[in-house]
Length: 347
Image 1 (cartoon, rainbow, N blue to C red):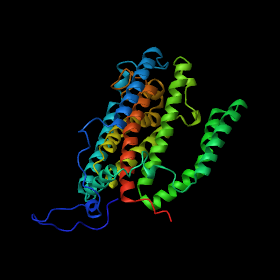
Image 2: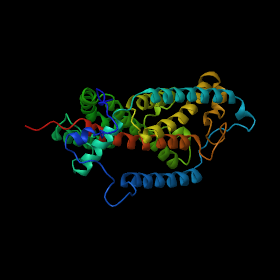
Image 3: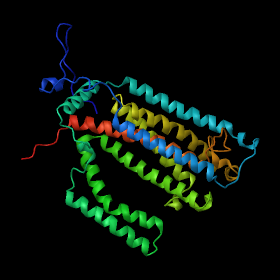
Image 4: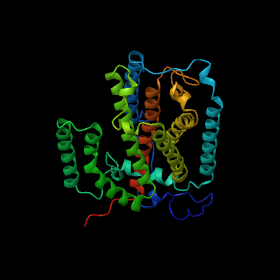
């Protein structure tokens, strides 16, 4: 999403003026009162720490029941895990190389525009590009009311959890589709970024429900498959997480700005992808080994390398360390979109 055109050539005697300054915006400077911790990041850090403490308590008090491989058996397919790591490493290197070759002519401009608008008090608390822009407040309010009414009604009628969950989402689907179409036309690939973030939030809810079910059933994995238990099998996990990994890699290449949080999300997704490449291979080519305990993967408790986390808790953690930096990256990119695409004047 580079700004069209190229900046004019300058000489040493001609100071460079940014587009923000040319349009009369104040030159960005250090924040008033000196540098301090970002309140958004500090708040997210506190939330993540609380989640980590709760998860640690659950891991200790609610171990997951299931078959375990012997110390000798778990190394049987170590070469598959190594091959998966090599595949992911190659993909990571490709992203790094392609990113380094792309121009970054709009990075400074975008940062200056955001800083200038922030100093002028023009930026809303929530970026405009993250709000519904094509849907009226009345329509969004009606969707919220419909969700709120459908949920208790279907729950009291004894509907399956998957249907109850879908009833919450159903009123929002046409609104999100309309909004995604508008944002794609106006903001380009940023619309895909937001949609991926939304899907990852829903994915995280599914993992959170599974952890809650494990607590309720004292670690019985056979009764803890999330809301959509019919989709809790290895192929679905492999393809959804692979698409997320590939999508984040493409965003790193296309967006190009120095969005550190997007890189962190991509690195976390890369580690997660190694896990699913190994698991999917076991599921397809050595299902007996998979069922005997190979489903613990690489870093799960009693897995190839192993950790204190049973598989459900490990994959909850993977998804959390992908989601949190991804949301911050979306927020920062939304600020840049606000600066690049001013709101249309109201006549």
